[in-house]
Length: 327
Image: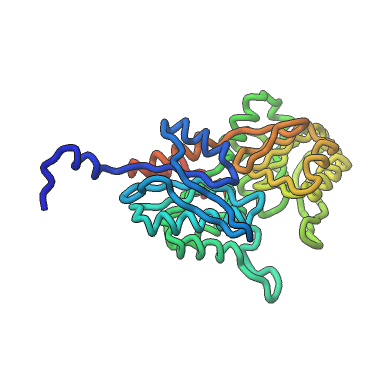
């Protein structure tokens, strides 16, 4: 039946709805400000037994829903919030649902490294798709190949350009500067950062006898007397990182700077970093972090706001995506 009332025609136009989980609301508020929208109403509560309850305070019928969540902190609650909110939006007839995952938890188990182990990075992808997510926007996955676990579009952003800009503004002597990859797996990203800074690259050869433990067995490249920038995708307990820093110092490294996209900072991580022989540690706000001592933060709000705007306006996201070349 044709609609002749102009007000009803306008009501049928696309609508953007931006929601946030509890794991990183400060970043979601920054993104909302940049987009010029308000964080829409979503009630997230817990029953007495810990089960999560979600309900939208407004209609989402026909809307393009973007849900910002970091799978961090209490990772299991954060993941369930995302899944339950997605199910609620799907059942409320949202047109599309985009999960904006600022930190993709469970990404470290992306393969079977030993018999009888799960591949939880794939499991999380399956859960998101089954719940009803139509698209994922995420940042610096532990391994870029995790995108292949999805049968839906994945926009993989990178913080490397932010780190490149940050360190370029510090005006280092590039002849005396080296970017250090903490292991072979991170070498491609470290090379990209070294290209941005127009400096040399070194790669640490690292052994890992158990979880959250590693030892530097050698360095490929020249670090003696040079300012070193160690780049990684995440810092968890910082035990491995701080041990590596001390080994680099023993090998003759000069000032050492550390940067990582995701500051998980479990247990004594911040204390370890403040006690370590580093100048500073820079992380993004993909996970809520309080800047203090040697810990500095830069925001990824622009990256997510631009990606959300491009997806909503059905424009190319490729110019914003850095994760593919970074990993």
